[in-house]
Amino acid sequence: MGRVIWKENKVLSIETRKGIFVLAQMIKSPFLMFFNSFSEDNKFKESNLENTPILFLHAVTRQFLKKSNIETLKIDPLENYEQPKLWIKENSGSRKVTVWAGTENEKNFISFGENGGKLVEKDILKDGKYNHPSGIYDKSIKELMPKNVDISEISNYELTSIEIYPNLNERLYLCHLKGENIDPAKNILFNIGMPLEYKKYVDIVSGLVKLEDLGY
Image (tube, rainbow, N blue to C red):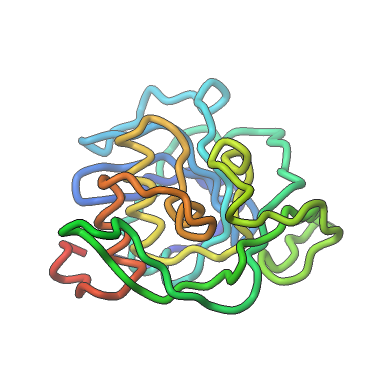
């Protein structure tokens, strides 16, 4: 895979799992906008992004761009996109996480975000440049404690984390399976039950299985 040069409004095809591709658009570095448009043959010639649902906007690392299978497409970008103002900032600290307890699929691993997180207001675009996606925020809106949160309450907000390969690729594949924006990282952060379809994602983020054994 060659070097990916960042250019605002460049439209991309990004491979999730092998053979499944998603449409994305470079906003201002390091943010990518992902669309609810997937292809098994990497052909999006008829796509009109003005009429294509958006999955989410998220910051990505250079490692994600370097490791992912990415192709630049000749598709008109989406214009006049409204930037999100509310985000979820995970709390500091770490904790032990158990998923699928008492079953043959039980996994135990260490994760970030002790005692959940908080809903924060963050203007990611100031003076024509994007602020660093994690860390600093403008205002805390609400504490989000695991025992008081359900997935519907947080589904419209993205984490302030910076996504890496292949965590984000697997998340996008799961969005393809579900037909909507999902984020297993929120299930982990807030101790929300994990569907078994998220097993490979858990294997990736837990580090309990080698990536080469997962097909990445």
